[in-house]
Image (cartoon, rainbow, N blue to C red; front, top):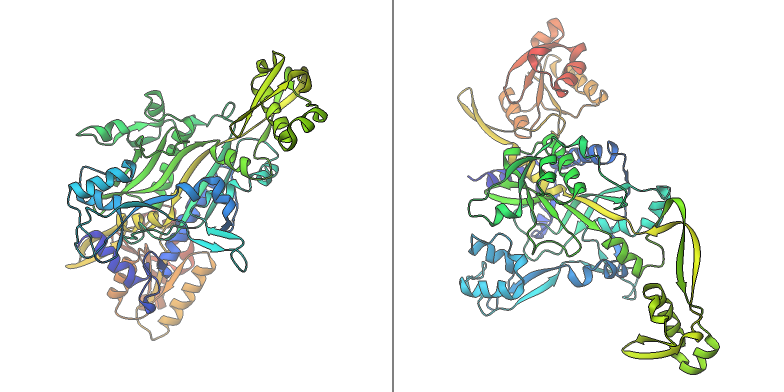
Length: 578
């Protein structure tokens, strides 16, 4: 059984995750986290929040998941948030066209970057068939399909909206208020953990490609001319980098480079991106990613968004495939500039000069008593055009007349009627549009990666055992408490111990069903690192047996010392050190 199949069986049986709405036939692309999975996901989110919010001094917000259409018109999602779709003429099934090509042509890893025309050609060249009915797809057109879920805000259809396809826009649109909370001082970071929605054409591979998912995103607003990251803090962190040059080579493989080496050698182009690549390594190791199955892959030229000079993805290997779990991008001023064009508020921030500056400014004061009668309804537009022209090209006013173009038609105005003048002004500063650095984490894919990377098997007492090698801080349950028997007061004593451990802040499970071996196996399968057994010796000396999951070793601990002992184990001590 493959590791992905083994995890799928375990996840459903033990309550990590399972397909939603099973009682109604299921809904593709939606998953429910069971008790174990919800706890693991929450622990991963808490680790992210600790490292990227608390320790970096950032703030967190929670924005709505439904936003008005105007937001996504400004962000570009209405026109450019598409995937390639191909529909089978025989059975009517729809599929991600680029994924079909990637499955059919092993040498192609990113067919999405090739464009619809080339993907259509590859489908025909390689005789790609419909996965549902095996009909040929050579003549089927490859189209673009917008991934956003549409809705209406309020009754009727007068106020269209969309479920957000990323959490980032909820931060960007609130920048005018967020900058006030930051006292108009750069840099500052705003984080958000929340749901996002994409109407995937072909949901697949469990939590890898779904229609509702959780993102943990940080938008770090910086002054590109003044703000530099504290590279020294991560300079010696080693990164497994898979740059574009290695991807193009026949034998290219990821290679280790420190953050400093990656910058000095020009492998990573942005200091801010390199900084967050280094920062994130601690997070991946902390939550339990197998670093032998992890890499940072640089976006190829066809993958990068037009506003991004350099982008890297953190990828984990799952079942022989590499999947993206995080994207690191330097988004420049694209997002805030776009919202500044469409919205009614300012998306800039005031940068104070060290000393006031005297500058020359060209300005116009058009004679509307002339423009109105002369140009009628175009007068106001001509006045605006003159103002813009003066700001960008004062030499246009050197002659007796100046021309402006409006909707393809040129209007000529006497310079003396424009009120053109160049004046000296003293300025204390200027308004700038901040740039944005964004590490964006896919929480569901991280959960899936941690589970697959933690799935282990061995033999204990001649019996095969499967277990999840989760760290004590990530495991859904920290400690399980068992009575050896449900009589002679052992069960009452065990329940009392479980209650005390809960009060001390541990996640505790109580189990008294089945023999003790089966109870151990159940806890091993869900990754519980420690088990406490109350037996007849407990009645004599007030000690309990503490068992460690990975080694299955055991030791006796005084009940009064148990909370301290569990705390020390979680902190990294071993049973022999208790």
